[in-house]
Image (cartoon, rainbow, N blue to C red):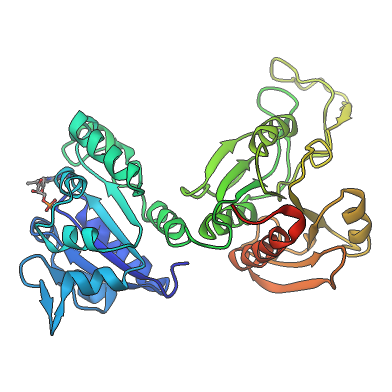
Amino acid sequence: MIAGARVVLYVTGGIAAYKAADLASRLTQAGAAVDVVLSRAAEEFVGPLTFEALTQRAVYRADASMTRGHQIAHVHLARRADALVVAPATADALARLAQGRADDLGTAIALSTAAPLVAAPAMEPAMYAHAATQANLATLRARGARVIDPDCGRLASGAQGKGRLPPTETLMDMLGAALGRDGPLRGRVVVVSAGGTREFLDPVRFIGNRASGRQGVELARAAANLGAATRLVLGAASVDPPASVDTTRVESADEMLAALRQAVDGCDALIMNAAVGDYRPARRAVSKLKRRGSAAQLDLVENPDLLRSLPGGFVRVGFAAETDDHLANARAKLRAKRLDALVVNDVGRADRGFAAAANEVTIVRPDRPDQTVPLTSKAAVAAAVLDVVVDLLAAAAHGPPA
Ligand SMILES: Cc1cc2nc3c(=O)[nH]c(=O)nc-3n(C[C@H](O)[C@H](O)[C@H](O)COP(=O)(O)O)c2cc1C
């Protein structure tokens, strides 16, 4: 979503203004054209040269930039923006935005643009918690702005509390979803399961698997970036869930099933990407099992088949991780599990699938030729799978978009 987007980044005068330089850089690297607008106060914290160098574009300064050439800057920037990001957003800037003031270039753009507004408040915890700031945030949210909750932690003053600007990754996720708000999944609810399950033998040991959660997290991010309200049920994972999706964390297959039962309520599509253990220990010891100086046996019982346990008329996409004959049984599985599509990946090789950064999959559908997605990033695999979901949802059987 970010590649090719025109983003206006309005930097206001908070101590976190230096972090906006990283955001400008990452957006530029991701292929966005970033027009940075500095408030008067922001220039006290970080200079225009930094942003000019990082974005390779001229920076708009509060006093000097009300026109550029023959263009009226706020009208020109407002018209061409795909999104307006205020990061960091000071308490004062939030107040001005909520009031609809136009006393500098950034606020004038906010009043003039139809593009989505993404605001990332960053300030002292007391300022953030103040009823005035909270009322301003509620006003902006009610108008459709996406407000990114600040993180908790240490502030520049030494205070601890809620008010830190979240990491650049979080801002990028929220911007991606804002840019995709009118995408082909607008009005749709997509549920994704991801990560691995852990079945505990005792309080510290478990039977797990090598799933990293990366592919499922990319699927959830891709769904959000196409406009879907996205619910992620995430088991054990080595990556963070995207900030743009509603995430429930689980450990065991039973917990995953319970979370999915809630998540699929009213959903349009379910993508089952999680690596769910087929078996769990018959008993879970209350205290840590001790060595006994002899061989030990572990009794296992079967876990429920999650897909079969989730009735409903939504589109169903499954993932199959195979180490051999990976396409041989795919069509049988597709029918047996009544799937609309099955994404088959060969996890027997170190450079793809499971914990690897890349993946190569074949997408099998009942009435279509197999579609192979050659070795590529998990984000690109996610995009290909979401294309299939869009196609399946567009099919009349599942009704028109809301
Ligand atoms: C050293 C210093 C740090 C500041 N940090 C913040 C901050 O993190 N968040 C905030 O809302 N205001 C902060 N302020 C106050 C703003 O700079 C002030 O409200 C200013 O008028 C904001 O203008 P702007 O919103 O146009 O950028 C800080 C002020 C100073 C002097």
